[in-house]
Length: 413
Image (tube, rainbow, N blue to C red):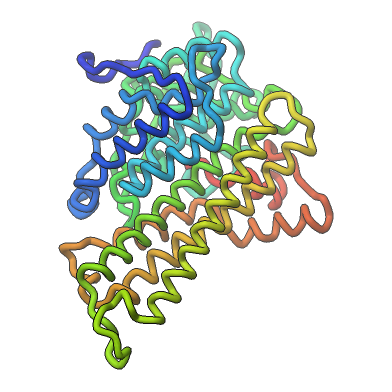
């Protein structure tokens, strides 16, 4: 059952603290930023960068301390993803499902499953994703099935938007069992019957390899089948996943804003009729840069507020605390989406015609923002926040039977 390891000559670092995680993230971001534009332009998959990224120990920072991990704060996880995503948002998105998987294991995994898979994460093994199905079906309608056999289980189905699967050692697959209940099947990436197809053709997030996974009678044992919602109460696990998406959007927007300022300082010409000799002195540019800076700080502040509430709601928390964390996460997602789109669009208006030249590849920021922010319907986030504020309504996030469940769940791709 064990997954095939990555490069055997690569040492896997074990991070011990929040500070160490942030220091390593900043160092890696400096490295990843160097060729980010080229990788996007050529659609060159970041295989070596992913190996370096996971070997750094950052992919194990939310493993609980009881299992040998650092179990850093949600705020630190958010910061790490923003830092990496500002350098290369595809690299930021690839481990999103890995973190979401580990977070869900804290709630859904049995002690044996937690012990095995948490140890695999600390050993440098990566978890991908195979959740969404063609036609955007609800989990309760998934056609991917786990069926019991005389010697164990077999899994068959087809998945799309499988971010991280191509680079993974393990692919967590959303499926239904013989009773129609939702489970997550942990499939070894190179097991017989597993096919990962790199056919992602989106105009943004181009190097995430978010293609298909096809599963044909893949053999599993009981340890690999994790029942969803093993605990009866709602939890904040999906809110952590959503905050990571928000952090990726923050990183995209910050990269766009930084490139806008760089262009204004180094390459842009002042607008005709502005009566200034430098683009950085244009009063309307100053106003717009100021507005984007305020928008960034506001989005960042709401995201960190949500992270603090999610931290408080982890574990055996009161339902009211979990609800507050879920709603705060929805609020943060609204602002980070708007900031990423505003900053990546305003870049061209302020930086001018030169900024559209292909050699700069600055359109990748808008393409990435527009693509990644589609993970959730922000219009339903507003609706969900309003329902909670006015009617104190929060639906069961495991059934997905009510549209207000979008407040927490979103798409797990």
